[in-house]
Length: 238
Image: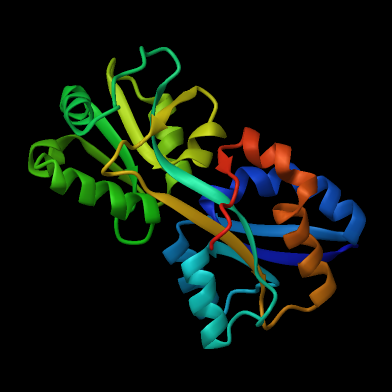
């Protein structure tokens, strides 16, 4: 029986992980056991002692966990940038979201608005702040459909029965959900691009295997998969 390799991973990177899983398991001779969810939930799972060989989350969270000793210094690699985006079902017309005014009008016209947990997910917290800035959170409150993570919210959006529904989460979670269309990123001044990275857990049973997975996720070999799945290239800092 193959050894098990444990990954705690932000939901925004789930589609990419599943895409490289067969190659990883074949090359490393392990069975990947991945847990996906909101970044806050993954951090909490790591802190509670969940088995973890590699960890994937926002660049900021990775940095914090390296500093705390939970992840290994020098083991992190950036996977890509992900926009917080707007989604609709594939059978709906694409709404206008190119400005604050059109976004506000589109959201107010929706019969239900789907989003991830505003306390533990990057996209959920940001989107709720956008609703506050647009001064429509109270109006939309009865129509908000909140789920533990973006993947769950998008699955429910795809299955929704209301004629006019909309959702907001990371673009990658939208792209990997059948039945949905990515309308586009949130417009200025609400746009948010989040960099996701991977790192080796301090408790990893095999450092080389963990580094191999991170290379598959972040390396040139998966660039086309990342692009197709909603990741933007990392812009070099100067």
